[in-house]
Image (tube, rainbow, N blue to C red; front, side):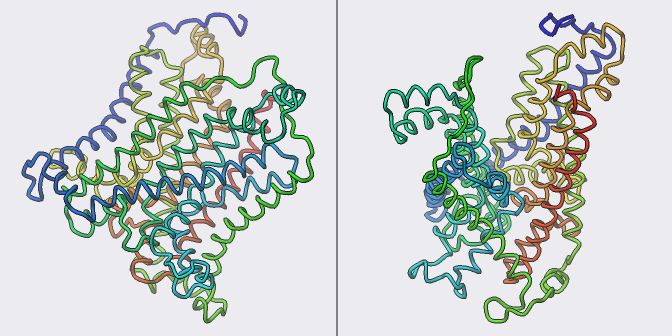
Amino acid sequence: MTANAHPIRMKRTGDALVLDGALVLLGLFLAAFIVLPLTMVALRSVHDRSDVFVGLANYAAFLHTPSLAQSIGNSVTMALVSTAITTVLAFAYAFAITRTAMPGKGVFKALAQIPILAPSLLPGISLVYLFGNQGPLRFLLMGESIYGPIGIVLGEVFYTFPHAVMILTVALSTADARLYEAAESLGAGPLRRFLTITVPGARYGLISAVFVVFTLVITDFGVPKVVGGQYNVLATDVYKQVVGQQNFGMGAVVGMVLLLPAVLAFAADWIGQRRQTALLSARSVPYVPPRRPWCDGAMFALCVVIAGLLAGILGTAAFASLIRYWPYDLTPTLAHYAFGDVDETGWLSYGNSLILAGLTAVTGTMTVFAGAYLVERGPAHTGIKAVVRLLAIVPLAVPGMVLGLAYIFFFNHPANPLNALYGTMGILVLSTVVHFYTVSHLTAATALKQLDAEFESVSASLKVPVWRTFFRVTVPLCLPAILDIALYFFVNAMTTVSAVVFLYAPDTKTASVAVLNMDDAGEIAGAAAMAMMIVVTSAAVRLLHTALTHGLSQRTQTWRKR
């Protein structure tokens, strides 16, 4: 049978029925832990403190409370400004990596990923050290305070920069050299070629980067919590209403308002992606950047500055955690790593994060890959698959703060038999898997789509059990993607704070929450030290992932080189 032959349909055997049942269970799982909790938030937003139905009264009270209503404008303003700055810088950085012949591209590409290894609280802490009341660079603010819009924008640019770079690097890595040759032969200069070929060719990547950064900023909790000061934004308002005032009804209202821009940004990006067309055809010639000394030098200098600023933010937190008292006593010390002196849980919170990250990586990877297999390779009806696909995409549009709040209402409901999970490590693992489900699912689905459907067809014709084909063929062929998913879950579980801040108990407090608590208590050096433990752990796991991927690829991926 040739590669283009029509695949053999899987007969309605016992294996097929099992796969159908498993897909239905996956759909029920996603509905139970995504749709139902979000429904609980919507219902709670129309009830008062005494759980009495009040209709839209809470929304009216929200709009008539100046500080709360102002948070909408503040959040949108911070998101727009941060998105504009981040997108411009990321586009220039990605352009330098993909469209110039400058040296050190691999190093700069790796340095751009530094912020992913850290919780979003870390840039806020570093900015306080650099630009706070005792900061050596506070003069650069010309009398303004780092606590407020300036600090939020600077912190969010650091936090979202790698996400935009990854998207734009992919968008700019594909180009047809014939377009540039034709434009040059017609007398178009470098600027005109850039505006008429490069930018339009990357427009869908730009659209995705804009909406991803906008969503990340408007839903982020860490940066505004540390350096927001009295400048209220929606994400911190949810925290204040729930944790500070125990006003769950108003917290649900703010959560629903916070959900709206995230959903709109997600929908706009999805529509844009559907309109995307291929940039390369079978006759296309890959674009190879020519050597242009003046351009290469300028782009190299730009990348040095940006990478230096990224490394400087991280280095500031590391340095502050290793000296006695910033900036007056620079004596080296490890005293700030004695977490038991400044936080009641001590090193336990770091251990909890390791447990959370490990369990999330294992259970999340298994669930996501098996689920993606059922959707992409299973025999179920296309209608069922479409519903499950939709449910798998929903978490991408749900902010972590809203998900955490939803789980409070859902698991605390008296009728929920899973109420015992609340306050345990189980609910932290579950919320983290759900929070980061979508990207992992899309990664697994992409890997599975690259495999020919004949694997299952031939196995069925030879009466080989589907589980044997899955473990002996599908898993080995998709191993690089599986390892990428595991790394994604692990790193995000180490750094996340938005959802777990509502769900942890004293004995399950994570390292990221400990950073938040220490910062609230004024123990900024201890917070910086714990944040650096998260960074070091994430970096070590990433290095281990690289080595493991390389080693296993030599054994299981040699077919790709043929």
